[in-house]
Image (cartoon, rainbow, N blue to C red; front, top):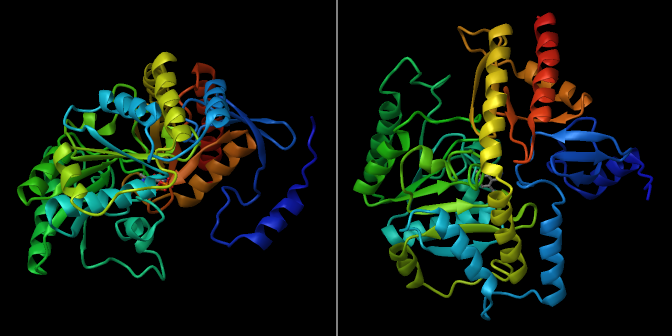
Length: 437
Ligand code: PMP
């Protein structure tokens, strides 16, 4: 039935009831009431193509997710203090996708919580406390996660970097310190870990581990050069540290050929962290680690989460993994990602404001610059494109330290028509950017 929504009143109410840093995506916000696959429908019933949201991994309002959730809610929903088949079924599905050494699971309620737990496990297993992490990373909104998220702690009033955190550069080979013309760039970035470990020794500390988004997302949809993580992990392990892969953005089939991002880097992390897409919108995060690390952690107090690993959450997450498999969504992510990337390369050939296009599967970035030599970020142009795409009913995001990278990261259900629409409308926007120069 038609539902009248007064968007002006809704916005005023939101401002009255919530803090100003609970951000909206657009200055002129949009209200969505329904979703279906990779489409969202606004208060007037108008469709939008959701090319931004990685949480509805298998598509908005998937009937199988609704069915399994309703079924479990009708039966019961409880915590992990009683036996139930659902957590074991999910653990089985997840570990089947991971290297065999990663065999012990923890289920939590968010990516932030999974990263908090990863810090505790790394510290328990290593006996160290200090963390090495790339600059401009994001691992969550809790106190511990913010401490390891330069994207947050470097903002005003956030207290800055804690002495137990050592930053290395993001391995951005487009605009970073070491670029694509340097054949040894992966090694050069990884060698910064030596400096971080030396700084830890100097302050009398001990490394607990290294944590990174396998492909940094808020850092600007970065694909590190081949060999980067292997060279980092080697250094961290030699110092007794634990290697943590935050796969919240990159895991579960989004990358097409790689079910997890670390496969592309040919490494085996000691801890893998999952979130966002795992519940297709239902809050669930996960951490998977080795038996040895889990045993060190188990020497501490009881581990318990009221909601983490509930019957309901686990059944939903298992269903998500099954749908990815049964609907061939990894293969679709690969095919659609390649089509998007090829189209974005063609746009780059036509429009000088496109400095770089990159990505794997449906994890993509298009970087806008005012000058291809100086790489001056075209932040205003990126804002223009994002807003104009919204006018044309396509949702994308913006990332990177200068907010000049368009982030394209749709549900894995997008098809060839959708990709053509994105490219066609992007072309219109880029033409406008060039005309305004
Ligand atoms: N890690 C990464 C890489 C993320 O992108 C996010 C969320 N954007 C988180 C952790 C935190 O997850 P959550 O918001 O579920 O706590």
